Image (cartoon, rainbow, N blue to C red; front, side, top):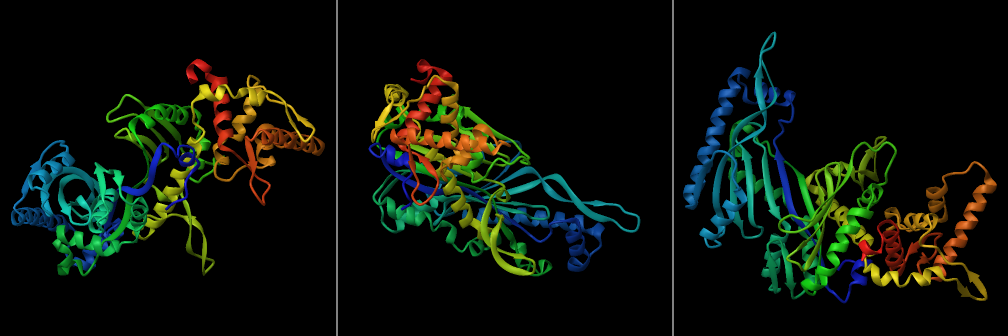
Length: 511
């Protein structure tokens, strides 16, 4: 069982349990025709045909794949549909699942027109060549009710390079694992609202990325692309990558009433108080002067099925929303893993060594996806621990204002209406300090920068030390043992975040 966050500890009386699990996972397979040189070399030396004859060859292979799809549907006694225009394919798959009464195996085959990357023939000075392009083509969707993964689909484009996409859901996989082990649970859509053994559920969920993915994916690929066993491919196989991975942390509350009162405040806090630096810190990054991209926060309250807030950093994002009124879900979605650094073995200066390197998309990195996403979700929940009922906290402002007498020494109070004090509170509550805490130097640099005068440097550091003591005697910050760092306590998060809200919005809006 994962370590409880401050958010879970704070709301322990209202929280049943927390479960972190892969949600939607999209995997892609590529044959080794990734560029112009590779496809031209394959045609010249693999197929041993003229380049001008490749287009008719590709057309025959596309027709072969379509006929194979029709045969699969006929043998499984399921429907094969050609769908021109736009359609809700997921809804059609769910209707097919109901029609087959939960029968395992193939349940539906769809053929649609989509624009995908492929090759075209260009004329050159000496001989034609094949080059990348995009063109409309038939794309096949095989929908399965898999005994291990539930409702899933395998998508294959019929023109070269015959790219395959596999869609699965980690919650559906976990449900079947719990069923096999006879652990009782209640699943609604892609979430669990009840479970007899949450510890066992978390342990099983952590094993998702340890499956033999290459064998599983190769097996699914052979079902939809029988050309893999033909001589002209000469044993070439797909290289599998993680195209999109969603990893969610669900906090299950005891009742809808328990979450209903808190959730609007969580949305407002996330939308109003989480800066670009905060969002980057949740994702394990720092805002660098050379950062090339956007950090966007989007909060939608009038949407179906419910309100949500999304923080987008380039192609990756963090989301928070509720499910069925009793689950608070925090979800990290990774589309570009190269934005994250992980500890892995790499080649440097001719030697193999462990180092911090950008995360790769290879299927073997799924466990890195889990570690990075879970840490991101936990940091987000830690920051949300500051949210509380501001009206009650406002009554505690007296504790912050009045002087405190400790060991015959008087410690002055703070003024919540003073801009300098509020700026100090905002600096201490900065998202970058959630996981690591803060030092005197961190706060001083954010407040004053780096003074050129050494005497001024010492004066600012001494002043901050006294301020830290004033916060410490009020129980708002605490020392991290064996370090020079401090952390904001749960009470400090509640009170300081409320003071910031009241200062900028006023009590009537914060309450």
